[in-house]
Image 1 (cartoon, rainbow, N blue to C red):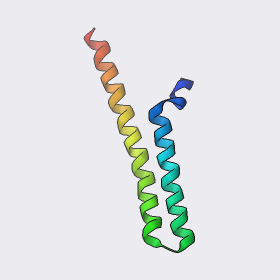
Image 2: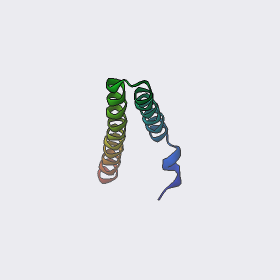
Image 3: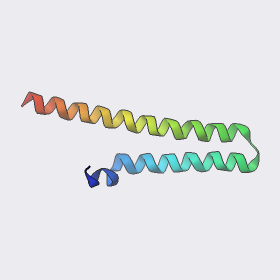
Length: 69
């Protein structure tokens, strides 16, 4: 596996958004705010899904470019 994948901007943005969402969820749990905890959990899952979609899209474009050469 390529080690550069872990320092890509897309990956770092995904990690930052997941950590921020996780922090929001934990804050909601600590404050006893169920809505805030749920929003944090949902945003954590959404950030991972967006990252997976973007990676698949970029990989698909790269394959298409290689086939077109």
